[in-house]
Image (tube, rainbow, N blue to C red):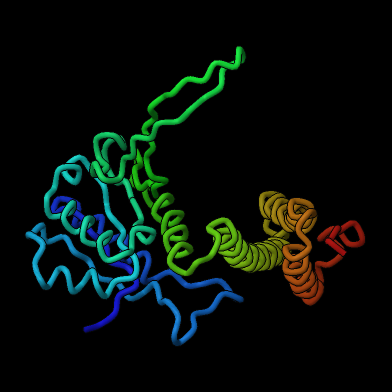
Length: 281
């Protein structure tokens, strides 16, 4: 039978969330420097169990061949025999440490299966050296997919996807999340540089057209001056905005130099700020 690295277990009512989580995990691309080995875990090998059926031989076989069990918790999950029986079996086969709780709706106390909640008696020493015993309720550290708005839900889905994958690969979630943010920042910086180059070049072209049309009246002259002001401010303010990011400045400097060359070719370099243009260099 096929091996699975993650089995996503949920009640039928949460099937949509289970499928979206599975899609998010499958589509996640590891940052550079973090790779998968041929014999190691592969978070993309997923199985989704939202059947709600009693535990049978087929369900046992799937759990036998799954490294991790991600349990989506909601008020319907708490007393679900299908979910609780699968959880109990997963523990029976020695995989208690590979259970990932994911709360999707409701409060933890109303959503976690009872086996997730541990009552523990702890001793505390008071300032007068009196020893007392207190029973505390310990809930599992869970991924949280609850959100008030669709946009916020997308954010938490992205964040929890990274955390779940980190658990499966045996990585520290913060390390993987930091690498993920760096990758997204690099992509954003590259996009900003392209947009900057387009804006600066477009401003130069419009300025040139306005310059040619100045003979037609004062309005065209004002338009040309405004366009040149946009180009000049962009070349000055954009590098200043990213002054603390050397990598961003490198991209932006290249964009500014390209735009200045375009203005020079148009004979407008003396109008675009000349020596006053500031770059990251």
